[in-house]
Length: 392
Ligand code: RFL
Ligand code: PHB
Image (cartoon, rainbow, N blue to C red; front, side, top):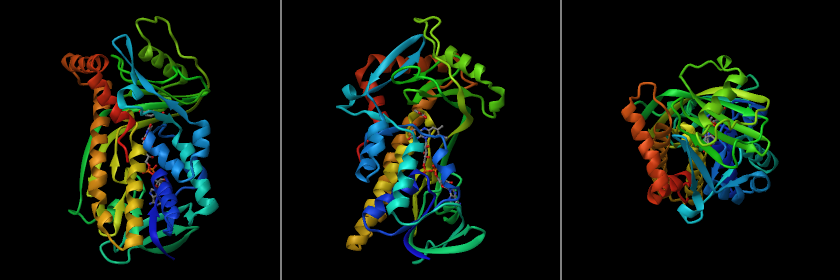
C-alpha cells in the first residue's frame, strides 16, 4: 500500500491531521494500535482553547461541540481560605475556553473519518519506521496477525509519548529535555453535579485539588497524591473526604461537594518533556509524540491540535506549490508555542502543588504569587492569556 502521508496513531492529533489533509485533498492512512472503543473511551483532557474549537468547527466536527460544549469565562483559584475568580474575557479582550471532553472530540473525528475520509485502520500496530532520511519512507505494521508495509511521501508520528516514531530518529539527531515531578494526580469521574459553575484550582497544605466537569451531571475531579499511589488505597469515601478538605474555604465552614457514584478512577504521573527538532528528514512528530506537559495548565490536547494545523498547512502548501518552505519551518514554528505552554504548565504545576520536600519559605513564595494574581490585573492577565491560548 502507498499513501502521501502515513499517520501513526489515532489519538486527537492523528485524527485531526487526517481530517485536515482530507479537506486539503491530500491522501493519508491512519494506523492505530487499539480498537475503536478503547480510543473513544480513554479519559483525558477536558478544556479546549478557542483556536482548537475554531479548527474543529472549520473541519466539520463542530456540531455536537456547539450543542454540548460548555463555554467558560473564567476559573476560580482557592488558596489560604480565599477564593478569586480570573475573568478571561475581561483580561484577554474577549477570549474564553470550552469544556468538551477529549473522548467526545475523538468520537466526532472518528465518525467523520470513517464516513468520508481516507483509511483509518484500528488494531494496526506499527513496529518500525524506516528510510525517513530517504525519498520513500516505509512504515511496518501488523494487523489481524499479518505483517504489512505502507510506503509514503511523509510519515507523521502522532503516536504519543511511548510511540515508535521518535525511535526512528537516529541517536544524536534530536535532543529531549525532560522534567519529572514528585507527585501524581488521582483522577475520578463521578455521576455528581460539578462543585462550582467554573473550574476550581485549589492550593492547600494537604496538596493540590482540581474540580472540573464533563456536563451539568458529571464531575471530573483530581487530587495531588504521592508518586506510586495505588488507586485501591483510595476508596470513594476517602477521595470525597479529601476533596472536601482541600477545596473547602475558611469562609464557608462545612461546605461539601455533592457526592455521587464514581465511575472511573486512575493515577497519572506528571511529566514535562520536549523533543527537538520535531522533524527528521521525512518524519514529523506531532502532539504528545513530541512534547508532554503536566495537565495543570490544560494545554496538551490544544498543543497537539496546533501542531497538526501548522503541519496540514505546510503539507498543503507543498502539495499545491511544490515548495517545502513551510515544512522546513514546521519545527521552529511549533516549538515557539510549545515552549510557552511548557513554561505555563510548569508554572501552574509548581505554584499550586505541594512538593513533599518544600520548605515553609517555598510555600510562602507560592502564596505570594497567588496573592499577586488576585491583586494585579497584569499578573491575572498573564495567567488568563496563557490559559486561553495563543491565536493560530
Ligand atoms: P495520544 O492521545 O496519546 O494518542 C496517541 C495514539 O497513538 C497510538 N499509538 C500507536 N498506534 C499504532 N502503532 C503504534 N506503535 C502506536 N503507539 C501509540 C495510541 O494507541 C494512541 O491512540 O496523543 P495525541 O494524539 O498527541 O494527543 C495528545 C493528548 O491526548 C494529550 O496531550 C492530552 O490528553 C493532555 N491532557 C490535557 N490536554 C488539554 O489540552 N487540556 C486538558 O484539560 C488536558 N487534561 C490531559 C488532561 C492528559 C491527561 N493524562 C491522562 C495525561 C488530563 C489528563 C488526566
Ligand atoms: C479536565 O477536565 O480533565 C481537566 C481540566 C483542566 C485541567 C486538567 C484536566 O487543567
